Length: 552
Image 1 (cartoon, helix red, strand yellow):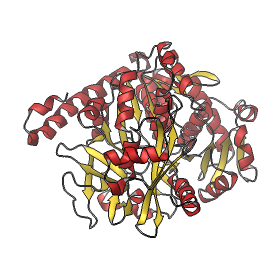
Image 2: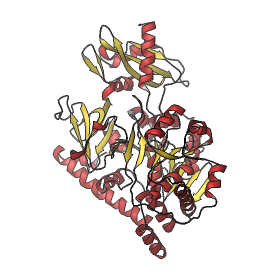
Image 3: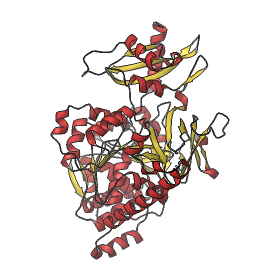
Image 4: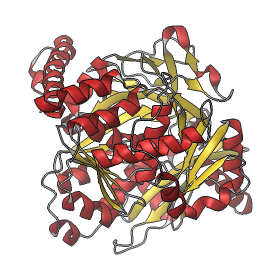
């Protein structure tokens, strides 16, 4: 229960802000003190900062000075202390420096592994932009990216090496080739650059070609960090499991937290729900970040799996990347306790808002209140304020927006003087200042003159007996302009498989007639991107084909 509920409505936002400022500041202070170097290592840490070069590179050197024997990361090959990790980063930086990578960019076509983290660190120390590449990209997509981003070197996993076969720059293949290149190099710090080269993360590309978004390694707005610490209980030395791919912004949550608190990151090369539970228990992990489809797969495990593992040290599960259904948040609470945090943001906007478990219980469906230093405005079709409780486009004002796209596509999404970013999402803000995301602006369907957000229909169908997963899209229709259709995945654990007609009848019990899908098809699985978003364009194509073949 929110204690500020006892106050008059106009005072609640102020009381919440004051309470959050106090709690967040105290937690940040605890993290800072707990992650600080012992007194006898202070000179080494100070020297690391004085010679820091790029900020991200300095973090690895600083942690090697402050916590040399602490485990920095765990992956499929074992573990590395901060000293070992920083030494390997330095060796890689010497390799890249000898190859003349300065002024170019480093592409990383790798799963979550030590070589990927080493690539980030080495690039930062050299003032070179690292570009993690989606491991699902085909050879043509990889070639296009390498060309457009002016990449000079690639570190690649053997499983994907054929995708860079024609690349003319330096190629290091993970394994013997990579280790042989590092072996003769010194552990000493490389010649550093003063350039703060941005990280380039490619957006998911659900509606077209992915776009490269530049994000600086510089620190996030301190006020935003205070608010984040008030809502997510990070602590010094935390171990964080990293199941989300590091070519997606969410993957950096675990890496960033571990480095910030001097903790350990446990990297998962491939997400498996049972492995996630096992690793979380075995390493006594405090936190992790998941996309909703990952969380659902974990919760679908048999109860015996959870009974065999001690998850008592888990304090936060940050969920982001797509909408978190209230029913899924409720399931997670029953299994893990009140640990889920619903994070709303994007590669371009960074963190926008965070909902705590208490927020989601008091305000089902919310993504929380905007973080300090972030302002959210709901704009109507004319660009004016939509008003409290009204649905409109979410516009974010923040000092921590991305630096811009590396290509011309969508370059107009940022208004530099005002630091504004149009999220492309439709949403509303209630009287208590809590934000709700209705749907993607492009996904809204106008059927017979009525606006329908597929997410609303999906939330109803998710409650239908026997439904494990569902997505709703709009397809052209001669009579209504567009009609809604749905794809549903049946739950194998349920006694009876649902039918399309049965699901439409269920919708009629909970929705207006114009929101009931014209057709509902059962399929084996929904298509997802690696970052956990439904590929709606693929579903629209399939729906159009099916409607053309049989419109009823």
